[in-house]
Amino acid sequence: MSSAMTALETKIFRAGSGRDVVFLHAAGGVSDADPTLALLGQRYSVTAPLAPGFNDLTELADIADVHDLAIFYDDLFESLGVDNVPVIGHSFGGMVAAELAAHYPKRVSKLVLIAPVGLWKDDEPVAELFGVPLTENGDLMWGDPDGPAATATRVAMEGMEQADAEQIADMMIPMMQGFAAVAKFMWPIPDKGLAKRLRRITADTLLLWGTNDRLVPPSYANEFARLIPSARVELIEGAGHMVPMESPDRVMAAITAFIG
Image (cartoon, rainbow, N blue to C red; front, side, top):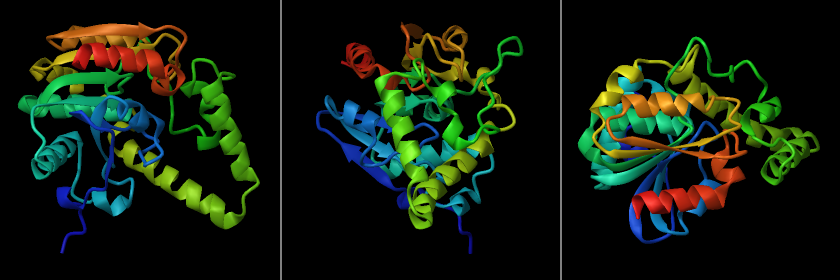
C-alpha cells in the first residue's frame, strides 16, 4: 500500500472571514501562529494548506516533480470545494501558486506572487539557501537585519540555544523537514521549467517584491511580469525576502487594492 499523501489528509489552517482566498506558504511552513496568515485574516477568509512533506517526508512518496505537485493542489482544491479564487503565494508558495495557475488556469481568479522562486538567471542567480545553516540564514531573508521583525526572529533563534535537547528537537525537526521538502523542488536550482509555463496563466497577477531581497533579487519581478500575460509589479522599498513580515501594512494595502 502506498504511503503517499492524499488531498483529504492535508493539514489545513484557517483565519479570518470575508472573501475566500488561498494562501500558499514559504519554506518556513505555516501554523496557527503564522503572522502572514493572521495578516491576511484581517480582511479575508483564508485557507492555508500545509505543503506535502512538511508534516512527514513520506507524504512526498508519489510526488515526483512540480507537475505532480500541481496535480496534488488541483486535487486539494477539488476536495475543499475551492475554485476560481484568489491565490496568494510567498517564496516557495509563490512558485507553487504559479505552477497551479499555469497547469490549471481556471482554478485561480487572481494571483498574488510575493517574492516567488522558480526562475533562474545566470547573470544574477538566486542565492544558495540550502548550504546555509537554518540559524544563520537571516542575512538572506531580511532587508534590514537589525529591524524589528528580523530582531524578533533572531531573539527566538537565540532562545533555542538555551532550550533543552527535547525542546530543540521539537523546534528544529519540523523546520528541517520543511526545508527537505522544499529542496525536492528547488535544489540544486529552482528552475524546473516554470518559465515555459507562465504564458498559460490567465489570472491577473500582482508581483510584490522587496527592493532589498537578497535571496531572490528584485530583478526577477520583471522577469516574471514579462512571462505572465497580465501582470504588474509593485516594489516595496527597503524590504527583503520576508516582505510580509517586514512591511505588513504595505503588503496588505497592495493585496487589498488588487483583490478588492
